[in-house]
Image (cartoon, rainbow, N blue to C red; front, side):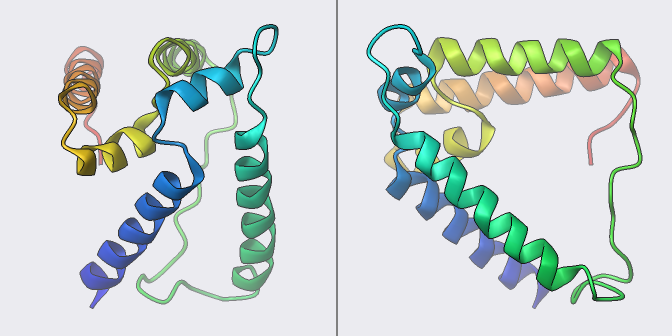
Length: 139
């Protein structure tokens, strides 16, 4: 049941990304072009996501545990370190250059576009290299 719910949530998330235009690289790059031809559409997408998150956290916070797990898994790191900065810079550069971040790139695979596939493949190779070089494994 947990896997089915996870799949359903992923499909809804991917459909939302596609419907909102987050899988359109030109629209994303237009949103990031603050001093050129700025496209403000995605600001509304982000605002809607923040609103849903605020409401969702208020509903979940009183719960003692999640529905499909024994306990909540919240991040414990609270330091800004070199890895975080480098990762943030790489994420931002990749997003700005091509117009994809991981979620929309994976959702764009549904279009069977070779460029989206190449982006996701490159992203996975990069993640693997980070794991290999840092001696850590992704979950």
